[in-house]
Image 1: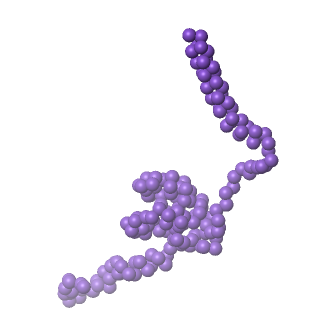
Image 2: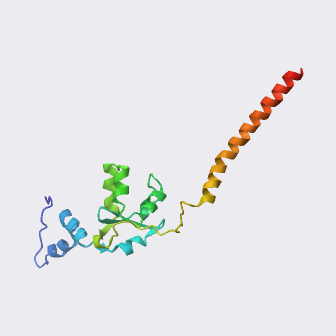
Image 3: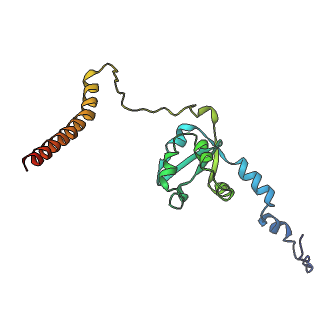
Length: 172
């Protein structure tokens, strides 16, 4: 829907239409397609290194998002986003029940796809191993004493009070 009239050329002038056409932006459909095809595919190990406030990437529904610019504006705080790094955050995202507006905002943070074959099935917690021995009687005894000692002190206090009350009423 071009509303402008073609310019008339004077004799001897060269046409500039071809030069101007090359400067025109492509139609919106072409922009969207070319942007989607130029997006990168990331491996999990690369995405998981972006786990800081100043550099935060998330994996949601197989797509990679650089949410670094959104860290300060996120209604749940940056801690929520940081907790979702280093894993597939799809369930975390879905569990919150984000609005359609929030889902629409995701497009501007989209940077590519994740190679699903590189994402671990379950996040592995690497922590200090504790040797738990259910037959550790000293730990059981301590727990019982922590419960019984205050009860014994309370019973002793009531006994002393009732004894002193009985003695003071019988001597008067």
